[in-house]
Image 1 (cartoon, rainbow, N blue to C red):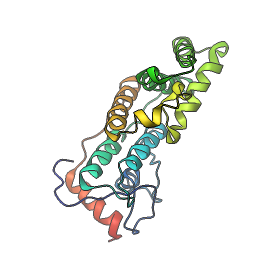
Image 2 (cartoon, rainbow, N blue to C red):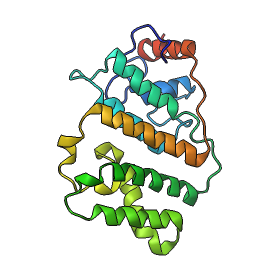
Image 3 (cartoon, rainbow, N blue to C red):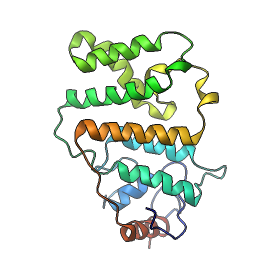
Length: 212
């Protein structure tokens, strides 16, 4: 992506091709050749796509658009999700990965939990991930469901902390944590992302925003 020199501007939210707006995952969807442009391209894991959408929106300026520099950051994250559906995990194995990603994120903000309950949820989720049996399912399901709702804050079991929004609203923290979760997901699933072709990206940008 560092080879893209022309201005690149993404926007908050999802938009139709040709509208002059789009999020990073819309652009990845276009590059992927999807017939219908979507926030959730088939080449990217749905949870990771949701993470990128959140970061994309957080990086937007007051007018809803991302600066060229922030557009590069968001699109780099989007490209890092490509290929993450190319695994052979069972549904349970994939849920274990999701829970481990949730635990990673939750532990990063554990110190913000004012209720004292978060650690118990995290440890219960870890026990289920180590031994995914029905008896341990409730706690793991809570962590997974919370993490799937990434758009509303998404760092899993710390959800009760009212301090979060004031303390960790900084975009750079969200970007850093997004990279950690994506990297962990790929390590656990054995997936890799191809290196994006700068010329192909530039073409996709032009088509996505001008419908050329």
